[in-house]
Every structure is written in C-alpha cells, then in structure tokens.
Image 1 (cartoon, rainbow, N blue to C red):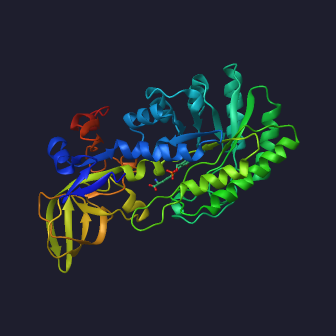
Image 2: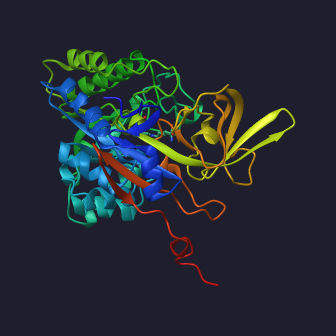
Image 3: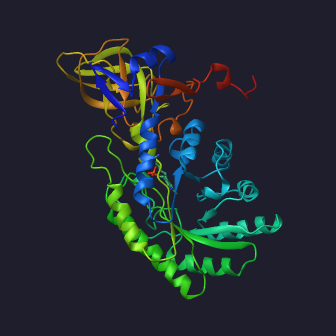
Length: 413
Ligand code: LLP
C-alpha cells in the first residue's frame, strides 16, 4: 500500500486528508499509517515463514505504546535497550520471553528489572557486563539467559554515526573475546547460554554485509558447539535500509531467503531486530508554514516544527522529502524549510524545489516514522508534537500534544 498519496491534489494518510488531521489535532503532529506498519511487519513474517524465527521490533525507532501494542498483537517480539523500554513493552503487554535486551551500558537496576521480568536473553557487550549480570542473577537466585554480541568487524556503508560493526565502534566484542566469555558463561550456574547477537549498523542498503555478519556468527556458533556449548538463537540485529529519496531499499525477501538458506538444516532459530524497516515509511511529520522570507537570494519557508521535533536532518544530514499537503500549480523555486529554533542547524530540508507556498499552508515531511518522535526533545522549551494514528478513515490520537505544564513538571522555582 501507499500510505501517503494524493487524491485530487490533496495528500491523504490512508483514507484521511492530512488537512483534516491538521484541522482537528493541530500542528506539528506526527501522523502514522496503521496499515503500513502492519504491512511492513507482515512482509517480514511471510518472508521468514518456514524458518524458526522471531521478529523483535527495535523499540528505539518509535516507542509509542499504541504502536508497540499494535505490533505485539500482530505477533512481534521486541528489542529493548533500557529500563524505560522494558517498562514500555511491559505496558504494551509483551510476553517477556519474546524480548531481547541490547545495549552497551546496562545498569544493575535495569538488569534486576529484566531478570524479574524474565526476558528471552541479554545481549551482552563486554566482560564487565557479563560479570555484573552474573552477580545480579546470583543475588536474585536466578539464571540469566545470555547472548554475546559479537563485533564481526564488517564494513557496512552508511552514515558514520549509525555504523556499528567495526572494531573502532564501541559495540560488541571481537570473536576471540566472545569465545572466552561463552566459556565463562557456560561454567556459571547463574548464566545460561542461549544465543549469539550482532548488529552492524543502520540504514544499510546492501545485503552482503548482513550475510558476512551471519557467516561470522555461524562460525562462532560452530566453534562453541565443538566445545559442547550449544547456541539456540542467532540474533542478526536490525539496520535494514529504506527509501528516503531515491535509495534502493534493501530487498528483504531476497535477504531473508539467503539467511534461510545459510541456516537451513542447522538447529538455530533466527532473530531480526528491524526498527526503521517497520515504521520508517509509515509516518510523516505534519507542519504548517508560518512565514515565507528572503535573505538576499535565499528563500526560507519557516514552519512550526523544527529540529526539536525532527533531529535527523541536523544530526545526520538526512534528506526527507517535503510534500505540500495541497498541491497547487505554479513555478517551483528553491528554498530551505526551517524551524523556529535559534540554531542555524534547525532545518528540515535545504535547497528544495517547492511550489509556491504561503503562510498557513501545510507540509508533510516524509518518511519520519522511525527516529522522528523518538529523537524529539523540548529544546527551546517547545512541547513535543501530538502523534496520530490513521486506520482507513479513522484517526486516533496516540499521544496527546505535550502541554506547557508537563514541560515544567518536576522543576522548582
Ligand atoms: N538492533 C540494535 C542493537 C540497534 O542498535 C538498532 C539501532 C536496531 C536493532 C534497529 O536498527 P534499524 O532497523 O532501525 O536500522 N537514530 C538513527 C538510527 C540509530 C540506530 C541505532 N540502533 C537514525 O535516525 O537514522
């Protein structure tokens, strides 16, 4: 399905005109298509059919409770990275044994909460972390299920800030170190070896790095098996790239077919941790033009949403398409779409050819369902936008626009 498309020059989210969403709920607002989220998830499930596997949606991409519930109902597990995300998936009704806990900096408190919940496994990223998990499990009289996150030293072409699979990155441990950690874990009565994990980066558009990473962890699994340490789960992480402008998105069916082929006949079960591939194209940021101004030759469209709502352009130089909510004829001209914040980096798009716009017009910043709201902040004391879920012709506020009182809650004067 095309979740966002023009019908008679008016941009719709599924069956709802976005102008009506703005009218009803105000701007800025993130608007998501329920159908697109489910379709993205189901496509993975269908591709994986026949291979024992679990799709653990990466909560960090978009952690709205309603979206988590939707995915839980559809059969997803979850990949979490904090006590906060653990609380969220719990609130969304996730079965704990379908949740994996990743991250390089788990605290003792977070481990205790995860041990109490009884998760599928901790993806452990260092010797220090393994030691602490063992100690916390011993203190609680429990056995902690673990995987070691292997850093496969695989190059994945993507933005340097979201590449994770080389030794220069803080993530995971090299293969040799992983083997020693597994031996330690296998000897401990408070640790239970369950899997191997890796995650090589995000917004990756080629298939080969994933296959290389799988080969690396399969080799570790075989080495362990030779020592009598059996691995159940191969967690390949997330990072599957999508189309923002003209990228060729990763062909998930081809990738999954290759993965299945490589593990066919082996006793392993596969975990994938997609975030962006499930929610990325299912969301837009709806914003209203406040002013149109010129500084010399340069034209600026000042909108009511900025880098506090959508940080990706400022942080990664990422390019989201900007579509007018109502298409009007007229000569296109180059302009920057900028927010109201006092930062030169506060732009949503630069040097874009846009049809004539005037104050009051609405724009949709496309493909912002992943790492959009999730990276938002209150910088410049701006309340976070509303989040709205569209399903067919129905709309539902799934997070109310933040109020000024809650902006200041917890502070003293
Ligand atoms: N698993 C692990 C262990 C991860 O660290 C991540 C993302 C994922 C899964 C999900 O990756 P995805 O399928 O969504 O690419 N803020 C950046 C992306 C940071 C990704 C961090 N880790 C952005 O806006 O592009």
